[in-house]
Amino acid sequence: MNEGMIPADLPLRNDLIGEEPYGAPQIDVPVCLNVNENPYPPSHAVVRSIEKRIREIAPTLNRYPDREHMELRQAFVDYLAKESQASLTTDQVWGANGSNEIMLQIFQAFGGPGRAVLGCDPTYSMYPEYARDTFTQWHTAPRNADFTLDVDRTIEAIRAIEPSIVMLTSPNNPTGTALPMTDLKRILDFCQNARVAGAADGVHPIVVVDEAYIEFRDPGTPSAATLVNTYANLAVSRTMSKAFAFAGARVGYVAASAGIINCLRIVRMPYHLSAVTQATALAGFDHTDDQLAQVGHLRELREQTAQWLREQTYKGEPLEVAPSQSNFLMFGGHFDDRGMIFDEMLRRGVLIRVVGPDGWLRVCMGTDDEMARFREALTASMHAVEEQTNQANQQ
Ligand SMILES: *Cc1c(COP(=O)(O)O)cnc(C)c1O
Image (cartoon, rainbow, N blue to C red):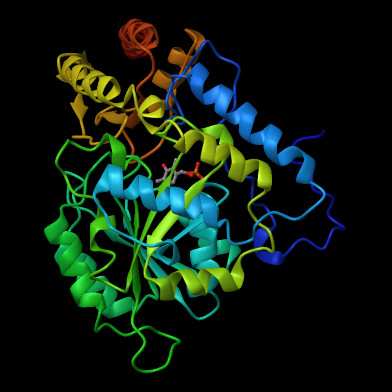
């Protein structure tokens, strides 16, 4: 396959000409710390459950799956009760192929021509793509210098832009920043009376909180899912891909008022969630403790790695580390050519991510071994780039 080649005589949409498929590079490297996966594979018990559940449904694969995926929605409800102390019913949850599909369904249902979405920069780089694909305008309000949400400016932007969707992310990607409940409530309260451009009077924006990394938050911190019964304009998106160690299963879900769920049901593909996917997800939920067994350890590793990074220097200045409640860290702050550091790391077999504001890089937590290799490779890479800069300056 000739990658990137698109014949000029194909009637590709005008606004997509010159666009590239999005995605982190999938490079075969010994240490992959670039896409925020959980590095620990499923336990034997989980693998056995997957085998058993798929064997059970295999003879029925001539039939379409349960379009409403009711058994799985009950499993989402049970998990949200256990993990987040949210008490919801099956008509308040909805699943899809990854939270990326959830988000796309949200844009399809609530965005569209004449509509706008507001996010808070820097944030997840997929949001502008869903906006493009659904002909929705993408706007951003800037965060504070420490990457926390600037609530006043966000509310000001909602007033000015009149979006139909306010996209918040907690913990945020790529910064790791959590969104305090008091800030979220201020935005939810404001949105209850805010206007939506391109919609009738009396229509108000919905607020989406993307909680892809929520299981990594500090213990005791509430999830926005606990507010779903109070705010009919709130949708909380979650995923099995990160802490839950099931990225390959492609399952995401959303907790929201039954009204919001019913809007998503209008735009979903018929039978969007395959019987195999539903069976696999149910097998994961048979063993939630197994799936989450390493979350505490990864959280500790994040704190240790943050501490270690703060003790390192680059060109005479200590590295900065953004406070994170997720399984990754954004660090550096003053990498004047972060691409060079990234390349040196890659040469040493460690793949991280060039993402976020200039001067920063992102790394996700791997196994203890992988993190040891990360530390070695970063030390050597920063040194190598410093040397190259010194030599260039001498010439
Ligand atoms: C990884 C990630 C997701 C999860 O995507 P899935 O489609 O569920 O794998 C969602 N939101 C953010 C911000 C992420 O970083």
